[in-house]
Length: 108
Image 1 (cartoon, one colour):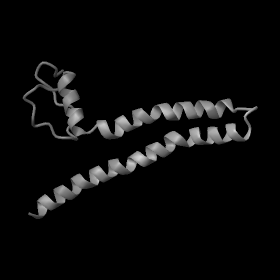
Image 2 (tube, rainbow, N blue to C red):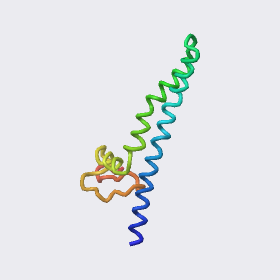
Image 3 (cartoon, helix red, strand yellow):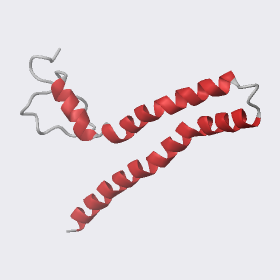
Image 4 (cartoon, helix red, strand yellow):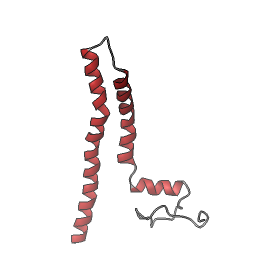
């Protein structure tokens, strides 16, 4: 039974890692936008173009980073491998870390 506890703990740590990544991503996403707003409030006649570009870039990349952290787990990678020719529908023995499973037709 100790093995089941270790597996549950490992799964829980994976969830905790992803959950702690969200505030970090959000902080970096809104950091430059907040600084840009403070700068524009303190000196509205002289906006900073570089700061505006950083704010725009990081606010827009926020969604991509969230999708990468939360959406690209082992199940999604296995489904993408099946979908994109790396595996077939009866390839249920795919293990993370093995690389992309090949079918007979796709082997070099």
